[in-house]
Image (cartoon, rainbow, N blue to C red; front, side, top):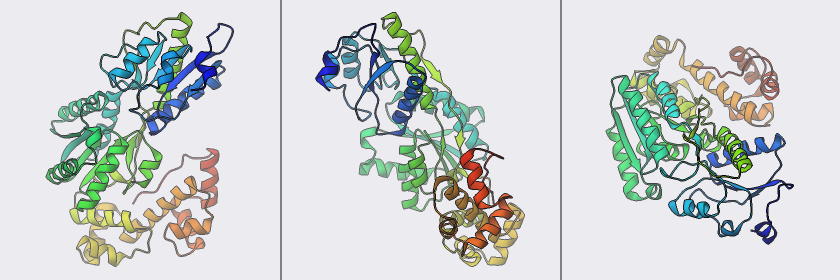
Length: 405
């Protein structure tokens, strides 16, 4: 902490000095900072003090003697809460980990997040439902309880597994996770408390040969684009509106600093989540036929690598002719059309998220050349790849959509 900041005394004629004790290591913290940034861009004269940190880091030593005006913090321990309270400054908590923290709280609405996840999974008519969460962390427990309530309203029972944050990667915890996954009645829908833990679960499924989404559909929370993209298959997730938490926390701190007090609000401020960002990890639960599930999972995994109908049939355990009949009966199309739709979906993603040339997009999506890709793309999407990319980037024209099999 620079000495000039630590020793400066606040003055009514100067910009407010605000410390942001918010981690940059995970998506929720970075989104909170974005929301605070939006508040600042609206013309609020704050001087912000921030340094890179992790979620469970202690309060920095310099905060004890800091002569600022207010603090927004992810209060992660009783020791941190005590340190911040001793500063005498108004503090807004944006984590909610401590049940008895002495500060006003702004946080995502964990119950509403769980309701969205339940609606998404229940619509797929799963045979069973599970929740994988963080042991001893109240935000995860609140999501668990709300998810269980939604499941019970539909006459179901919830299977729960929770792991301590520090024990995620121990051999014992990994064995417990595998045992839990293998014992779940298949065609299960599983909500995971966040995207980080959801990736752990997907990796365990992949190691054990459990098909996702054929046998287990998985949805996480936070819509961490990087984690959702590297997941195999890509992870469906709830967009939790952490940026709105940051914005509302900044507004609340501004009011507290004007009053020069730290009086806690009577109730926490809960921010409703955004939406379900559906990806492949919850795509095909509506298919009850286990051999079709294997075929669809194989297409998701290998569809952009020159996959043939014969290879899909072999993976499903059916002859080509029987597989084709079942596809027409259940999917309303052929195996070849399902492969093409998968390739076009991948082409859409590449057009939206990258600056690759049309030739490179076609190659990565599994098409032999760009001309054929353009022809199939136009048939499926009703426009050329170039026009699709322009429409998405300019946010013009019809809402971008992905074809389904």
